[in-house]
Structures are given as C-alpha cells and as structure tokens.
Length: 338
Ligand code: BGC
Ligand code: CA
Image (cartoon, rainbow, N blue to C red; front, side, top):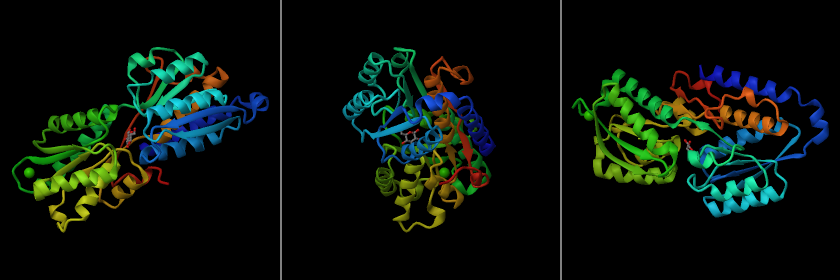
C-alpha cells in the first residue's frame, strides 16, 4: 500500500512540476532562489528529509536552493533567515529550532513579502494565522502514535512470549523525543491509549527523554536496564534513532534473546528500515519524507507561479498533512531505502 501511495504522489507531483513551466523557465532559469534552514542537520530524519528535498527541487530547473544548518540555535536561525532574504530568496522553507518562537522570522518575512513554508516542526496555530503567506507541511502526530500502538498490540496478541513473566501485563518503558515538540508527547499518548483500547494490559515501568537522539537513548536505556534488569518487555520509542539507541544499550549487556524486549520506532529512516528488515526492530511507522518534500515542492511552485494552489489539499487553508504508514518485516521492502 505504502509504496503505491508514495509512488502515486511522486508521479502526480512530477507531472505538475513538469507541466506548464515552459515559458517561465526561459524567463528565470536558475533564478528563483529558495532558502532552506534546518533546526539541526545532525538529526537523522531531518538530514534524510533534506536530501529528498534537494533531489526534488533539483528537478525544477528554474530553482536554485540555499541550505543552512541552525545547529540547534534559534538565534542562528533568525540570522540565517535574514541573510537568505537579503540574498534574494523568493520562498523560505523553515524547520524551526524552537517551534514556539517564530515571531522574529515571521515579522521579517512579512516585511519583505517572502512566503514561508514551515516543515516538520509545527508552529502553534496563532503564529501561523499571523499572515496568509505562511504554510506548514508535516504529518499528523496522533496518527503515528496510533499506528505504533496498533503494531505493538498486533504483535503482543500474536506472540504470547512477549509477556515474559506471564503476569498478563506488558511491562513497558518509553523513550521520548524533545520536550515541547508536537511529535513527542502526542506519539506517546496515542500509542499507549491505542494499546489500552486494544485490550492490552500495561504496566509502565519508566519513561525517559532522549531528545530524538540515538546516543542519549542508549544512555537512558542503560540506566533503565540497570534498574529493571530483565523486567522490561516492551520499548516504545518516539523515533527510530531512539529505538536503535535502546537496542545499542542491550547490545552491551549479555542478555540472551529471550531476555530482550521488543522495540518499536517511528520514521522509517534508512537504519530504521534496515533494522525492521533484519527483525531487530519489531516495526516502525513511516514518516513520509518523499510525500512531504513533494508537497513542499508543489507549494513552492504554486507560490512562484501563482498557479496550482487549488490542487493542494490544505487543511485550514495553510496546512498540508501527509499520512503515515505502518512498516513491518512483511512490507518493509516496499519502502524507499537509500
Ligand atoms: C521525527 C524525528 C525527528 C524530529 C525532528 C520527527 O518528526 O520523527 O525523528 O528527530 O521530527 O524535528
Ligand atoms: Ca509481563
């Protein structure tokens, strides 16, 4: 399913991007600058999404792309936005460092009439409503948590050995993303609620924040293992990198396979998909970077040309949300791997 949807979207986007550019292309070949700034390019998912965006925009000859890495500093990102506007960027794509603090950027963009497409880190609604040339492209956090919960419930039902101590409950821990990120708390809540609604009895042993980061997750998991030893039966991680970090922590113990919990992630990064294919990661939820970047490219094209806005499926006029997809060992080969 996933593959066909991804592919259909890509084809639709491609057709749109190719169509109707003829005259305009001559007029401004390579001349339309698009500026992109990312919150932190050491983030696995964001760097893969950026590669995708670059590839997608490279197919549009009239566009040249400038990329900046804010490396975790909102001040740096504000400066980058200012510079990119001065350099003549016509559209900006902003992956906010602090999703609650976009006002500096918004004021600047508005003053110079440069539309902004925020992506992946969603500004609060009041901020996006400040100007009608602000957009957001991303995905619905709740859906990713629900899918993770469903995947975990399916596996728990089909494999009684997951409840190792046979007490009828699943002892679990959570590795959570950055505090304040729309995808962190919501993923956890909806995954846990879904498991409960599916009739799985749960016992929460602990939860730890690991800021989307593999090394931090390894660290936190090591602490939880020393506290709970072999009691942990399920690890729910808000993203693949943290699930992999948790697996790294178990790799350093001498527990046998039957003493190691099952792990679930979100994203379907290259390493995540590989771990699913090898059966180390029980399942993940695909964060559709191809769909998201195609939507961004279509939006950029529509902004530049003043045509095609009506073909985009906006929610509340300014939001484009792409659906997630479940990834298991059975369908993992259908997902794009680098
Ligand atoms: C992804 C994480 C990523 C974060 C960055 C989330 O949607 O699932 O892997 O670290 O976005 O903002
Ligand atoms: Ca149990």
